[in-house]
Amino acid sequence: MTMQLYYSDTMMPRKVCALARHLGSPVTYIAVDLGAGGHKAPDFLAMNPNGKVPVLVDGDLVLWESDAIMMHLAARAGSPLWPAAADRQVEVMRWLSWAAHEFNPKTGTLYFEHVIRPYFGLGPVDAAAEASAIKACRRHLGLLDSHLGDRAYLLGPDLTIADFSVAVTLPWAEKARIPVTDFPAVSRWHDRLMQLDAWRDPFPKAAAAAA
Ligand SMILES: N[C@@H](CCC(=O)N[C@@H](CS)C(=O)NCC(=O)O)C(=O)O
Image 1: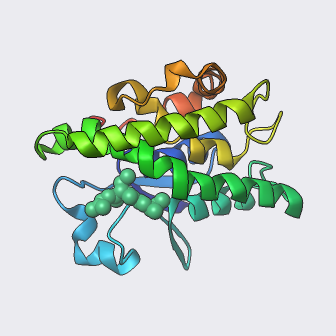
Image 2: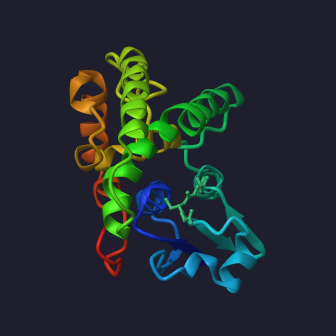
Image 3: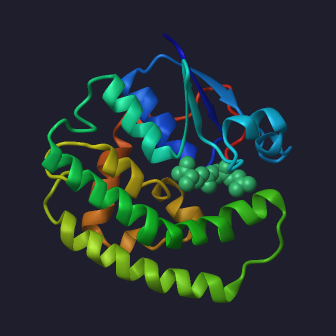
């Protein structure tokens, strides 16, 4: 059965679109125009009262939150990107939580200041927010660099959805001024992700110009 994936070509939907493409999931992509307020329209809010993308509809299941959507897509496909073993799931959850609560709020600030603000004409960069986010990002990137070391992916030799969650802002690193290039293991890891067609080019072709 085909699923419907509501997305925009922005940060959080990116990892979900990448995973759907990587798995070859049977998905119809429905672009939501954030600039026109499509995510605040009553029919969209009826699916996701948070008023945010992505949203996945799979039959009777209406699922919001990008990490939960990734788990669902991988589990539905029987893919080890969401591993079956409980101890591996705990490891994936560790990185999903770290991404959600530690790393991505900081990289997300830089993404907002340097990508979203100019794209939507939201005024000049907030210098104090930027400085504080860069400081925190450097600390997080140092931790990530030490962890990755010679590992191919966060959990070792195998790609998981944790890699997509932690890396979600890094395709915009240069534009968002996230100082990834100062961290060699992180750079190597993200270069490896970029070798995946789905990570390099996650959005369906009909997507509007990338933010
Ligand atoms: N925790 C949510 C966050 C989703 C999110 O922030 N989506 C952004 C696009 S990257 C959005 O829809 N923003 C519109 C708004 O906040 O008004 C998830 O991971 O799915």
